[in-house]
Amino acid sequence: MIDDAPHPSAGSRATDRPGDASPFALGLLLRRAHWRVAGVMTEALRPLGIELRHFAVLLVL
Image 1: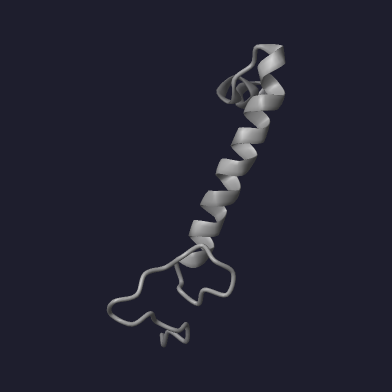
Image 2: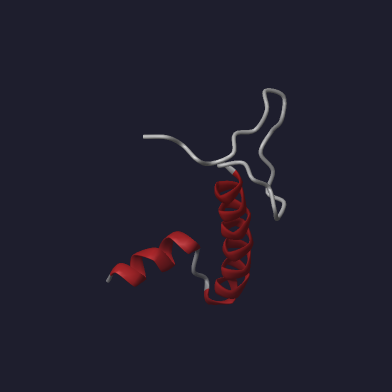
C-alpha cells in the first residue's frame, strides 16, 4: 500500500495547530479537546461531589 499522506521532513515535529499536515496532528488536537472537556466536566461535577471516574461508572450503570 502506498501512503499518500505528506510526511514531515526529518527535523520537523507535529503540532496541534490547524493546518498541520503531520499525520500526528489529529491526535494532538484530540488530546487538547479531551483535556478541555475533562476540565469543564470536573468543574461541573464538583458541586455534586462526583469525580469523572465516578461519572463514568454511573454512565455504564
